[in-house]
Image (cartoon, rainbow, N blue to C red; front, top):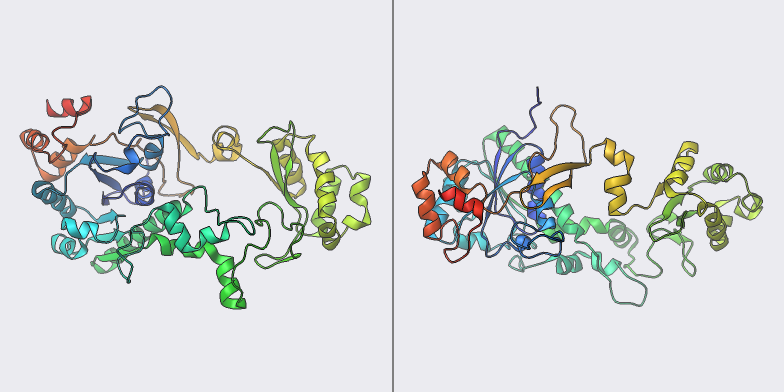
Length: 441
């Protein structure tokens, strides 16, 4: 007998697009909520022709790999909410739902006639989560944003890069994923409050502001120590201390060595393992794991200060040992002895080679009508009584239009056909997919 999931019985109307908002509803769907994604084919940027379409497949609104990862666990209806008829249908759907989530700039849903004041009239206890770039309050709430520009305002771009060079920014919009998790948290908080009081509320989340805490150490260095942030050395990533920089790193406290990524066998592009020894005792353990070579027993490496002073030589000598072992074998040897070491993993490693992720069920195969069978990342957490998991592949655009409006609103086949003809459910001049033609027969 299957166990109930935590959010079964909760219905969420999802007006969100691109990444942050859909990332929030993706996880709410994994927790069991029914997610009804309202789309329009002319402006869903996430579905537009994409470089993530698998080779050999036609590039269309249903074949973006990125979209289909971001939107599992959802139903899709196409609805022109800018038309009076489409707007009326949207309001009827909201009236039988628990949560509305959107991530447009602050004025968009207001212009559509779907601001919070109007939604309160439709459903007094509605939980309305806004996830705009700059929020719905403040002098600049009307600003529009996208990943790189919001990162710049949040402070993340400033911290990324080399000394004396332009700020580098981030290769991926971590704000979207982080903001999506914040969005899911906001929805859950709103539901808890509604269940306790019977009252809904408008939850105004700003994507840019949500990214500010990601600056953590830099923010503390300014507010506590009065020091402005500077890129004074190499980014403190793999190596704890770089030549020409202070041994005391402002963001980490006293630095340690070894603390780096080291080449492993056979020395190809992705053959690396990270090793960290925080104390002299941990270093001594690593020396034993290496077989106690003479160089490692030298007094200059016996203390943290000595290893930092001779870090370049330490790293070079350590790598002569790591280069003889596969990164996974190296990990096993170090971890068995209590030394903190883990392999540097590519996407292929994480999906196909990592036994921990495999045993935790991090990737689950789903059958998608356009993309075929493929692995999609599952929830990264485990619930012992109310499991969270991907239960459905991402929807084809408008795949559930007829199902939703008939089952929830009592509309009939003639209403559906009329909606396709008058542009409520699909642009009249745009070619329809075969499954939509089947829907209308």
